[in-house]
Length: 132
Ligand SMILES: [Ca+2]
Ligand SMILES: [Ca+2]
Ligand SMILES: [Ca+2]
Ligand SMILES: [Ca+2]
Image 1 (tube, helix red, strand yellow):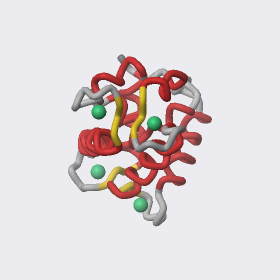
Image 2: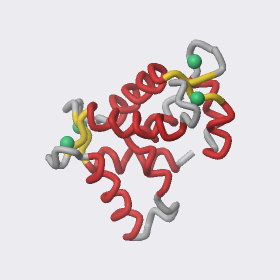
Image 3: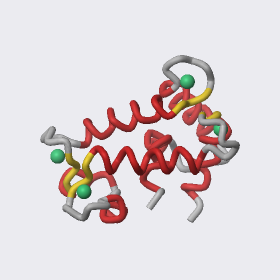
Image 4: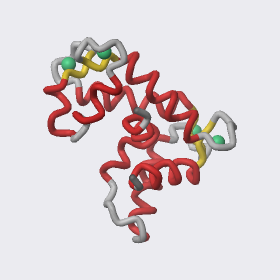
């Protein structure tokens, strides 16, 4: 249930290469992290994570009705997680459902409960995503 949204702090991370050992992967993750860090304070706060999440939501919501329907996620390999995130079971992911999920994932990734995500915390969340 949380996987889609850790992908939240990190959903752009899905674009990074799968090989974790490579130095390239680290720098790709760092690029994504720095891009999300709008105020350049080297940590991501909830607002920064949600801005990225909402931008992605808008991108996926091709018909702009404020909901992500199954058809819209077909090509994103998220279909399997779709029903988990559809908490009101109306067959679509509303932006509220997406945000709730992202906040849960944010809190799960924030290991030291600082209210912000350090690069290390994002990296750890990303690594745990890749490990079944
Ligand atoms: Ca920041
Ligand atoms: Ca839609
Ligand atoms: Ca729904
Ligand atoms: Ca933290």
